[in-house]
Amino acid sequence: MKRQRSPLKRMFGAVCALARTRLELISIELSEEKERLFTNICICLTAAVFGMLSLMTLTALIVTVFWERYRWQVLAILTAMYSVIAVLCAFRVRARIRTAPPFFSATCAEFAKDCKALTESQ
Image (tube, rainbow, N blue to C red):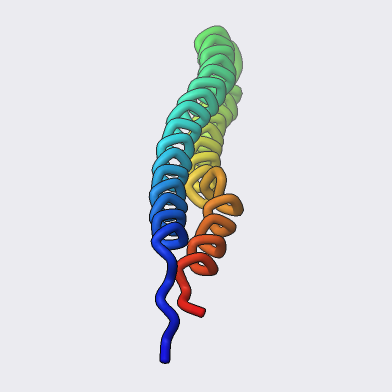
């Protein structure tokens, strides 16, 4: 014969479940905000650095295009290479952020254990 759980235990289990749900929601929201902010910062910094490198290379290209024979081809290749590096860095940062674990994941797991222990019948 199963013992009935006391109403206090049932209420405490419900409160724990509600708190766990709220913490998971906070975790998801903070994780999304962290991803958005960090991605934007990294993309802006990478774009700024490689944009300046591309601009300097383009300036050197314009200066040297009329100078000697093959210098402009090398500078054009460098400009393209810097641009490709900028795009690859932006994609890498975005991938790393997307695979990061959510905030408070350990706390939510502990709340789940607590709720399970409190709601199980004895």
